[in-house]
Image (cartoon, rainbow, N blue to C red; front, side, top):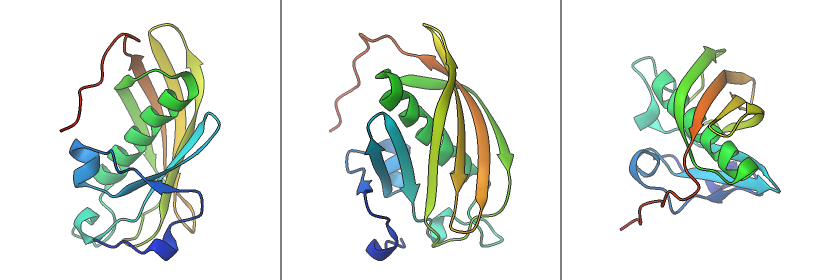
Length: 145
């Protein structure tokens, strides 16, 4: 795993409470300012495809997770992805700091729509629109062991 502390921008902290997919594919980092959030990670060789660039599925999963975090920080509600529409704009390189953020563009009591982007040091890598179902405010998040 490539983990160069010097490549992690100021204000980002490692998400140490990650579990499941995020824990297996991290470490992932987060920066929060008020109700805005950014997610970042340094892709390593394990994230690469046969061409030596970051696998598109990894990029999609990372943006999906980041958009869910955008919803959580913006409206204090957990959510699950219903639809994710992506535009791959350019490849991402192993070892480059990648960062994702988004904004809510619509919502009702059951659903939220988010626009997001993932970018690297030279250019945008991925753009996306996500539709997320809002979970009940009473829903408990399972305890991590």
